[in-house]
Length: 440
Image (cartoon, rainbow, N blue to C red; front, side, top):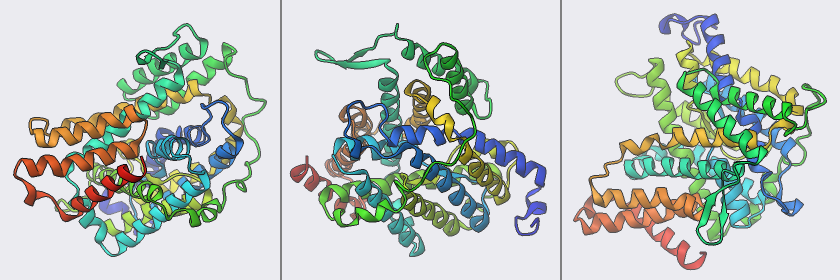
Protein backbone atom coordinates (compact mmCIF):
# COMPACT_ATOMS: atom_id res chain seq x y z
CA UNK A 1 0.00 0.00 0.00
CA UNK A 2 2.73 2.46 0.99
CA UNK A 3 4.70 1.58 -2.14
CA UNK A 4 1.72 2.01 -4.46
CA UNK A 5 0.88 5.43 -3.07
CA UNK A 6 4.58 6.43 -2.85
CA UNK A 7 4.49 7.32 0.85
CA UNK A 8 8.28 7.40 1.26
CA UNK A 9 8.91 9.38 -1.93
CA UNK A 10 6.36 12.03 -0.94
CA UNK A 11 7.28 12.07 2.76
CA UNK A 12 3.89 11.14 4.18
CA UNK A 13 2.28 8.57 6.51
CA UNK A 14 -1.08 6.91 7.18
CA UNK A 15 -1.79 9.43 9.93
CA UNK A 16 -1.08 12.45 7.71
CA UNK A 17 -3.15 10.99 4.90
CA UNK A 18 -6.08 10.21 7.21
CA UNK A 19 -6.11 13.71 8.71
CA UNK A 20 -5.76 15.23 5.24
CA UNK A 21 -8.61 13.12 3.87
CA UNK A 22 -10.87 14.00 6.83
CA UNK A 23 -10.05 17.71 6.46
CA UNK A 24 -10.96 17.63 2.78
CA UNK A 25 -14.27 15.95 3.59
CA UNK A 26 -15.18 18.52 6.25
CA UNK A 27 -14.24 21.34 3.87
CA UNK A 28 -16.64 20.16 1.18
CA UNK A 29 -19.32 18.33 3.18
CA UNK A 30 -21.65 21.29 2.66
CA UNK A 31 -22.32 20.02 -0.90
CA UNK A 32 -24.25 17.08 0.55
CA UNK A 33 -26.98 19.47 1.68
CA UNK A 34 -26.57 22.41 -0.70
CA UNK A 35 -26.76 20.29 -3.86
CA UNK A 36 -30.17 18.70 -3.10
CA UNK A 37 -31.51 22.14 -2.17
CA UNK A 38 -30.36 23.68 -5.46
CA UNK A 39 -31.27 20.84 -7.82
CA UNK A 40 -34.73 20.42 -6.30
CA UNK A 41 -35.35 24.18 -6.65
CA UNK A 42 -36.50 24.19 -3.03
CA UNK A 43 -36.49 28.00 -2.93
CA UNK A 44 -38.89 28.33 -5.87
CA UNK A 45 -42.53 28.29 -4.68
CA UNK A 46 -45.54 26.99 -6.65
CA UNK A 47 -43.45 24.89 -9.00
CA UNK A 48 -45.14 21.89 -10.69
CA UNK A 49 -44.15 18.67 -8.96
CA UNK A 50 -42.78 17.11 -12.15
CA UNK A 51 -40.22 19.92 -12.42
CA UNK A 52 -38.75 19.12 -9.00
CA UNK A 53 -36.13 16.43 -8.72
CA UNK A 54 -36.46 14.40 -5.50
CA UNK A 55 -34.19 15.97 -2.85
CA UNK A 56 -33.65 12.72 -0.93
CA UNK A 57 -32.55 10.90 -4.06
CA UNK A 58 -30.21 13.77 -4.97
CA UNK A 59 -28.68 13.58 -1.49
CA UNK A 60 -27.84 9.91 -2.05
CA UNK A 61 -26.67 10.57 -5.62
CA UNK A 62 -24.43 13.39 -4.36
CA UNK A 63 -22.83 11.24 -1.66
CA UNK A 64 -22.34 8.24 -3.96
CA UNK A 65 -21.03 10.31 -6.88
CA UNK A 66 -18.57 12.02 -4.54
CA UNK A 67 -17.49 8.73 -2.96
CA UNK A 68 -17.07 6.81 -6.22
CA UNK A 69 -15.47 9.69 -8.13
CA UNK A 70 -13.06 10.44 -5.30
CA UNK A 71 -12.19 6.75 -4.93
CA UNK A 72 -11.38 6.50 -8.65
CA UNK A 73 -9.22 9.63 -8.42
CA UNK A 74 -7.38 8.20 -5.41
CA UNK A 75 -6.81 4.69 -6.74
CA UNK A 76 -6.27 5.37 -10.45
CA UNK A 77 -4.64 8.81 -10.55
CA UNK A 78 -3.28 8.60 -6.98
CA UNK A 79 -4.03 12.28 -6.36
CA UNK A 80 -5.16 13.79 -3.03
CA UNK A 81 -8.09 15.35 -4.87
CA UNK A 82 -11.75 14.84 -3.97
CA UNK A 83 -14.69 15.04 -6.36
CA UNK A 84 -18.34 16.01 -5.92
CA UNK A 85 -21.13 17.72 -7.89
CA UNK A 86 -19.74 21.15 -8.69
CA UNK A 87 -21.03 24.43 -7.29
CA UNK A 88 -22.02 26.85 -10.03
CA UNK A 89 -22.66 24.11 -12.52
CA UNK A 90 -25.48 22.79 -10.29
CA UNK A 91 -26.99 26.28 -10.30
CA UNK A 92 -26.75 26.30 -14.11
CA UNK A 93 -28.51 22.91 -14.19
CA UNK A 94 -31.36 24.04 -11.92
CA UNK A 95 -31.91 27.73 -12.63
CA UNK A 96 -30.81 28.11 -16.26
CA UNK A 97 -31.69 24.74 -17.79
CA UNK A 98 -34.68 23.44 -15.82
CA UNK A 99 -36.24 26.68 -14.58
CA UNK A 100 -35.10 29.09 -17.32
CA UNK A 101 -35.27 26.93 -20.47
CA UNK A 102 -38.09 24.72 -19.22
CA UNK A 103 -36.12 21.56 -19.96
CA UNK A 104 -37.09 18.56 -17.83
CA UNK A 105 -34.61 17.49 -15.18
CA UNK A 106 -34.45 14.07 -16.79
CA UNK A 107 -33.30 15.59 -20.10
CA UNK A 108 -30.91 17.86 -18.23
CA UNK A 109 -29.36 14.76 -16.62
CA UNK A 110 -29.06 13.29 -20.13
CA UNK A 111 -27.08 16.38 -21.08
CA UNK A 112 -24.78 15.83 -18.10
CA UNK A 113 -24.31 12.19 -19.10
CA UNK A 114 -23.47 13.06 -22.71
CA UNK A 115 -21.08 15.83 -21.64
CA UNK A 116 -19.28 13.38 -19.35
CA UNK A 117 -18.97 10.71 -22.05
CA UNK A 118 -17.68 13.25 -24.56
CA UNK A 119 -15.13 14.51 -22.02
CA UNK A 120 -13.90 10.95 -21.43
CA UNK A 121 -13.46 10.45 -25.17
CA UNK A 122 -11.78 13.83 -25.62
CA UNK A 123 -9.39 13.01 -22.80
CA UNK A 124 -8.51 9.56 -24.14
CA UNK A 125 -7.81 11.03 -27.59
CA UNK A 126 -5.90 13.99 -26.09
CA UNK A 127 -8.19 16.41 -27.92
CA UNK A 128 -9.23 17.88 -24.58
CA UNK A 129 -5.89 19.61 -24.16
CA UNK A 130 -6.14 21.17 -27.63
CA UNK A 131 -9.60 22.59 -26.93
CA UNK A 132 -8.49 23.91 -23.55
CA UNK A 133 -5.59 25.67 -25.23
CA UNK A 134 -7.84 27.11 -27.95
CA UNK A 135 -9.93 29.21 -25.56
CA UNK A 136 -8.12 32.32 -24.31
CA UNK A 137 -7.20 32.45 -20.64
CA UNK A 138 -9.13 35.69 -20.12
CA UNK A 139 -12.41 34.04 -21.09
CA UNK A 140 -11.66 31.07 -18.83
CA UNK A 141 -11.14 33.44 -15.92
CA UNK A 142 -14.23 35.43 -16.85
CA UNK A 143 -16.46 32.36 -16.88
CA UNK A 144 -15.28 31.34 -13.41
CA UNK A 145 -15.85 34.84 -12.02
CA UNK A 146 -19.22 35.15 -13.75
CA UNK A 147 -20.44 31.91 -12.24
CA UNK A 148 -19.25 33.19 -8.87
CA UNK A 149 -21.38 36.34 -9.22
CA UNK A 150 -24.31 34.25 -10.43
CA UNK A 151 -24.38 31.88 -7.46
CA UNK A 152 -23.79 34.79 -5.06
CA UNK A 153 -26.83 36.51 -6.55
CA UNK A 154 -28.82 33.29 -6.12
CA UNK A 155 -27.67 33.14 -2.49
CA UNK A 156 -28.62 36.76 -1.82
CA UNK A 157 -32.04 36.23 -3.39
CA UNK A 158 -32.72 32.98 -1.53
CA UNK A 159 -31.71 34.65 1.74
CA UNK A 160 -34.11 37.53 1.15
CA UNK A 161 -31.26 40.03 1.30
CA UNK A 162 -32.22 41.22 -2.18
CA UNK A 163 -35.66 41.05 -3.75
CA UNK A 164 -37.40 41.84 -6.99
CA UNK A 165 -38.66 45.38 -7.57
CA UNK A 166 -40.94 46.64 -10.34
CA UNK A 167 -39.16 49.99 -10.62
CA UNK A 168 -35.51 49.06 -10.15
CA UNK A 169 -35.58 45.30 -10.94
CA UNK A 170 -33.79 44.52 -7.68
CA UNK A 171 -33.81 46.17 -4.26
CA UNK A 172 -32.79 45.52 -0.66
CA UNK A 173 -34.96 42.88 0.99
CA UNK A 174 -36.76 42.92 4.34
CA UNK A 175 -33.87 42.80 6.79
CA UNK A 176 -36.28 42.44 9.72
CA UNK A 177 -37.39 39.01 8.52
CA UNK A 178 -36.30 36.19 10.80
CA UNK A 179 -35.01 33.95 8.02
CA UNK A 180 -33.13 36.82 6.41
CA UNK A 181 -31.49 37.71 9.72
CA UNK A 182 -30.56 34.05 10.16
CA UNK A 183 -28.92 34.02 6.73
CA UNK A 184 -27.02 37.22 7.53
CA UNK A 185 -25.81 35.59 10.75
CA UNK A 186 -24.62 32.64 8.66
CA UNK A 187 -22.69 34.90 6.31
CA UNK A 188 -20.99 36.75 9.18
CA UNK A 189 -20.05 33.55 11.03
CA UNK A 190 -18.71 31.90 7.87
CA UNK A 191 -16.70 35.00 6.94
CA UNK A 192 -15.13 35.06 10.41
CA UNK A 193 -14.22 31.37 10.13
CA UNK A 194 -12.81 31.87 6.63
CA UNK A 195 -10.71 34.86 7.70
CA UNK A 196 -9.38 32.83 10.62
CA UNK A 197 -8.54 30.03 8.13
CA UNK A 198 -10.57 27.42 9.99
CA UNK A 199 -10.69 24.13 8.09
CA UNK A 200 -14.24 23.30 6.99
CA UNK A 201 -15.36 26.91 7.55
CA UNK A 202 -18.30 26.73 5.12
CA UNK A 203 -19.57 23.47 6.60
CA UNK A 204 -19.14 24.68 10.19
CA UNK A 205 -20.90 27.92 9.28
CA UNK A 206 -23.89 25.94 7.99
CA UNK A 207 -23.99 23.83 11.16
CA UNK A 208 -23.92 26.89 13.45
CA UNK A 209 -26.58 28.65 11.37
CA UNK A 210 -28.85 25.60 11.53
CA UNK A 211 -28.38 25.33 15.31
CA UNK A 212 -29.26 29.00 15.83
CA UNK A 213 -32.26 28.51 13.51
CA UNK A 214 -33.52 25.64 15.66
CA UNK A 215 -33.03 27.57 18.90
CA UNK A 216 -35.00 30.52 17.50
CA UNK A 217 -37.74 28.24 16.10
CA UNK A 218 -37.01 29.38 12.55
CA UNK A 219 -36.07 25.80 11.66
CA UNK A 220 -37.87 22.66 12.79
CA UNK A 221 -35.71 20.39 14.94
CA UNK A 222 -35.31 16.94 13.36
CA UNK A 223 -36.57 13.89 15.26
CA UNK A 224 -33.27 12.08 14.66
CA UNK A 225 -29.82 12.64 13.22
CA UNK A 226 -29.12 9.19 11.78
CA UNK A 227 -31.68 7.41 9.63
CA UNK A 228 -32.27 5.06 6.73
CA UNK A 229 -30.67 5.91 3.40
CA UNK A 230 -33.29 7.56 1.14
CA UNK A 231 -34.32 5.76 -2.04
CA UNK A 232 -32.27 6.47 -5.14
CA UNK A 233 -35.06 5.17 -7.39
CA UNK A 234 -36.52 8.58 -8.37
CA UNK A 235 -33.28 9.63 -10.08
CA UNK A 236 -31.29 6.46 -10.80
CA UNK A 237 -31.09 5.90 -14.56
CA UNK A 238 -33.31 8.91 -15.32
CA UNK A 239 -30.50 10.26 -17.50
CA UNK A 240 -31.26 7.53 -20.05
CA UNK A 241 -34.94 8.57 -20.26
CA UNK A 242 -34.18 11.95 -21.80
CA UNK A 243 -31.57 10.90 -24.36
CA UNK A 244 -34.11 11.15 -27.17
CA UNK A 245 -34.65 14.83 -26.39
CA UNK A 246 -31.05 16.06 -26.54
CA UNK A 247 -30.91 16.62 -30.31
CA UNK A 248 -31.91 20.26 -30.18
CA UNK A 249 -30.01 23.55 -30.37
CA UNK A 250 -30.98 24.29 -26.78
CA UNK A 251 -29.47 21.04 -25.55
CA UNK A 252 -26.38 21.53 -27.70
CA UNK A 253 -25.74 24.80 -25.88
CA UNK A 254 -26.44 23.12 -22.53
CA UNK A 255 -24.01 20.27 -23.25
CA UNK A 256 -21.31 22.66 -24.52
CA UNK A 257 -21.71 24.80 -21.38
CA UNK A 258 -21.52 21.78 -19.08
CA UNK A 259 -18.39 20.61 -20.88
CA UNK A 260 -16.81 24.06 -20.85
CA UNK A 261 -17.26 24.64 -17.12
CA UNK A 262 -16.16 21.09 -16.22
CA UNK A 263 -13.19 21.44 -18.58
CA UNK A 264 -11.58 24.41 -16.96
CA UNK A 265 -12.75 23.94 -13.40
CA UNK A 266 -11.04 20.55 -13.38
CA UNK A 267 -7.85 21.73 -15.10
CA UNK A 268 -7.42 24.66 -12.72
CA UNK A 269 -8.12 22.60 -9.61
CA UNK A 270 -5.77 19.76 -10.54
CA UNK A 271 -2.92 22.14 -11.34
CA UNK A 272 -3.40 24.13 -8.13
CA UNK A 273 -3.66 21.13 -5.79
CA UNK A 274 -0.84 19.20 -7.48
CA UNK A 275 1.44 22.21 -7.23
CA UNK A 276 0.58 22.69 -3.56
CA UNK A 277 1.20 19.01 -2.82
CA UNK A 278 4.57 19.04 -4.58
CA UNK A 279 3.43 16.52 -7.19
CA UNK A 280 4.25 18.71 -10.20
CA UNK A 281 7.41 17.72 -12.10
CA UNK A 282 9.10 20.14 -14.52
CA UNK A 283 5.91 22.22 -14.51
CA UNK A 284 3.97 19.22 -15.81
CA UNK A 285 1.20 17.19 -14.25
CA UNK A 286 2.19 13.53 -13.78
CA UNK A 287 -0.55 11.04 -14.70
CA UNK A 288 -2.59 13.94 -16.09
CA UNK A 289 -4.56 11.63 -18.39
CA UNK A 290 -5.57 9.40 -15.50
CA UNK A 291 -6.65 12.37 -13.40
CA UNK A 292 -8.76 13.86 -16.21
CA UNK A 293 -10.37 10.51 -17.03
CA UNK A 294 -11.12 9.98 -13.32
CA UNK A 295 -12.82 13.37 -13.19
CA UNK A 296 -14.86 12.80 -16.37
CA UNK A 297 -15.84 9.31 -15.21
CA UNK A 298 -17.21 10.92 -12.06
CA UNK A 299 -19.54 13.06 -14.19
CA UNK A 300 -20.82 10.00 -16.08
CA UNK A 301 -21.41 8.07 -12.84
CA UNK A 302 -23.04 11.08 -11.17
CA UNK A 303 -25.42 11.60 -14.10
CA UNK A 304 -26.54 7.96 -13.98
CA UNK A 305 -27.09 8.23 -10.22
CA UNK A 306 -29.01 11.49 -10.60
CA UNK A 307 -26.93 14.61 -10.05
CA UNK A 308 -25.29 17.41 -12.01
CA UNK A 309 -21.68 17.31 -13.22
CA UNK A 310 -19.15 15.90 -10.76
CA UNK A 311 -15.84 17.74 -10.71
CA UNK A 312 -12.59 18.09 -8.77
CA UNK A 313 -12.90 20.32 -5.68
CA UNK A 314 -10.49 23.12 -4.83
CA UNK A 315 -11.35 22.39 -1.17
CA UNK A 316 -8.91 19.49 -1.59
CA UNK A 317 -6.23 22.11 -0.96
CA UNK A 318 -7.37 22.21 2.68
CA UNK A 319 -6.54 18.51 2.96
CA UNK A 320 -3.16 19.05 1.33
CA UNK A 321 -2.46 21.84 3.82
CA UNK A 322 -3.28 19.35 6.60
CA UNK A 323 -0.75 16.83 5.25
CA UNK A 324 -2.36 14.90 2.37
CA UNK A 325 0.06 14.03 -0.42
CA UNK A 326 -1.26 10.86 -2.07
CA UNK A 327 -4.38 9.16 -3.34
CA UNK A 328 -4.79 7.38 -0.02
CA UNK A 329 -6.21 10.64 1.38
CA UNK A 330 -8.85 10.50 -1.36
CA UNK A 331 -9.72 6.95 -0.32
CA UNK A 332 -10.29 8.27 3.22
CA UNK A 333 -12.45 11.13 1.94
CA UNK A 334 -14.51 8.68 -0.13
CA UNK A 335 -15.13 6.60 2.98
CA UNK A 336 -16.54 9.58 4.87
CA UNK A 337 -18.90 10.38 1.98
CA UNK A 338 -20.27 6.83 2.25
CA UNK A 339 -20.78 7.25 6.01
CA UNK A 340 -22.64 10.51 5.32
CA UNK A 341 -25.41 8.54 3.57
CA UNK A 342 -26.90 7.73 6.97
CA UNK A 343 -27.35 11.40 7.96
CA UNK A 344 -30.22 12.21 5.58
CA UNK A 345 -32.59 13.32 8.40
CA UNK A 346 -30.48 16.49 8.61
CA UNK A 347 -31.74 17.51 5.15
CA UNK A 348 -34.82 18.97 6.83
CA UNK A 349 -32.81 21.57 8.74
CA UNK A 350 -30.94 22.77 5.67
CA UNK A 351 -33.26 25.59 4.63
CA UNK A 352 -32.44 28.42 2.21
CA UNK A 353 -31.28 30.51 5.19
CA UNK A 354 -28.66 27.82 5.88
CA UNK A 355 -27.51 27.23 2.30
CA UNK A 356 -27.49 30.87 1.16
CA UNK A 357 -24.34 31.85 3.12
CA UNK A 358 -22.49 28.94 1.48
CA UNK A 359 -23.51 30.17 -1.98
CA UNK A 360 -22.43 33.72 -1.20
CA UNK A 361 -19.04 32.70 0.22
CA UNK A 362 -18.26 30.23 -2.59
CA UNK A 363 -19.07 33.07 -5.00
CA UNK A 364 -16.47 35.22 -3.28
CA UNK A 365 -13.86 32.50 -3.80
CA UNK A 366 -14.74 32.08 -7.47
CA UNK A 367 -14.38 35.77 -8.42
CA UNK A 368 -10.72 35.68 -7.35
CA UNK A 369 -9.89 34.99 -11.01
CA UNK A 370 -10.80 38.60 -11.86
CA UNK A 371 -7.30 39.68 -10.92
CA UNK A 372 -5.82 37.52 -13.67
CA UNK A 373 -7.64 39.32 -16.50
CA UNK A 374 -5.66 41.98 -18.36
CA UNK A 375 -8.21 44.78 -18.01
CA UNK A 376 -5.92 47.34 -19.64
CA UNK A 377 -6.38 45.52 -22.97
CA UNK A 378 -9.81 46.74 -24.09
CA UNK A 379 -10.18 44.04 -26.73
CA UNK A 380 -9.92 41.51 -23.91
CA UNK A 381 -11.73 43.50 -21.23
CA UNK A 382 -14.98 43.86 -23.23
CA UNK A 383 -15.76 40.15 -23.81
CA UNK A 384 -14.54 39.27 -20.31
CA UNK A 385 -16.70 41.94 -18.69
CA UNK A 386 -19.78 41.04 -20.72
CA UNK A 387 -19.35 37.37 -19.86
CA UNK A 388 -19.14 38.18 -16.16
CA UNK A 389 -21.91 40.76 -15.88
CA UNK A 390 -24.53 39.10 -18.09
CA UNK A 391 -24.57 35.85 -16.13
CA UNK A 392 -26.28 37.30 -13.03
CA UNK A 393 -28.20 39.98 -14.96
CA UNK A 394 -29.77 37.49 -17.39
CA UNK A 395 -29.92 34.77 -14.74
CA UNK A 396 -28.19 32.46 -17.19
CA UNK A 397 -24.64 31.11 -17.22
CA UNK A 398 -25.06 29.91 -20.82
CA UNK A 399 -26.07 33.38 -22.01
CA UNK A 400 -23.03 34.94 -20.37
CA UNK A 401 -20.70 32.46 -22.07
CA UNK A 402 -22.43 32.97 -25.42
CA UNK A 403 -22.16 36.77 -25.32
CA UNK A 404 -18.51 36.70 -24.30
CA UNK A 405 -17.61 34.19 -27.00
CA UNK A 406 -19.36 36.31 -29.64
CA UNK A 407 -17.64 39.54 -28.68
CA UNK A 408 -14.14 38.08 -28.36
CA UNK A 409 -13.57 37.47 -32.10
CA UNK A 410 -15.13 40.84 -32.93
CA UNK A 411 -12.89 42.89 -30.65
CA UNK A 412 -9.79 40.91 -31.59
CA UNK A 413 -10.40 41.28 -35.33
CA UNK A 414 -10.98 45.03 -34.99
CA UNK A 415 -7.74 45.24 -33.00
CA UNK A 416 -5.92 43.54 -35.85
CA UNK A 417 -5.33 40.31 -33.98
CA UNK A 418 -7.41 37.98 -36.15
CA UNK A 419 -4.51 35.55 -36.53
CA UNK A 420 -4.36 35.09 -32.75
CA UNK A 421 -7.87 33.63 -32.69
CA UNK A 422 -7.98 29.85 -32.80
CA UNK A 423 -10.29 28.31 -35.46
CA UNK A 424 -12.28 26.64 -32.66
CA UNK A 425 -13.21 30.09 -31.37
CA UNK A 426 -14.59 31.03 -34.79
CA UNK A 427 -16.65 27.85 -34.74
CA UNK A 428 -18.07 28.71 -31.31
CA UNK A 429 -18.77 32.25 -32.53
CA UNK A 430 -21.04 30.85 -35.26
CA UNK A 431 -22.71 28.38 -32.89
CA UNK A 432 -23.64 31.10 -30.39
CA UNK A 433 -24.83 33.52 -33.11
CA UNK A 434 -27.22 30.80 -34.31
CA UNK A 435 -28.25 30.24 -30.70
CA UNK A 436 -29.40 33.84 -30.32
CA UNK A 437 -31.07 33.92 -33.73
CA UNK A 438 -33.14 30.76 -33.39
CA UNK A 439 -33.54 30.10 -29.68
CA UNK A 440 -33.55 33.29 -27.65
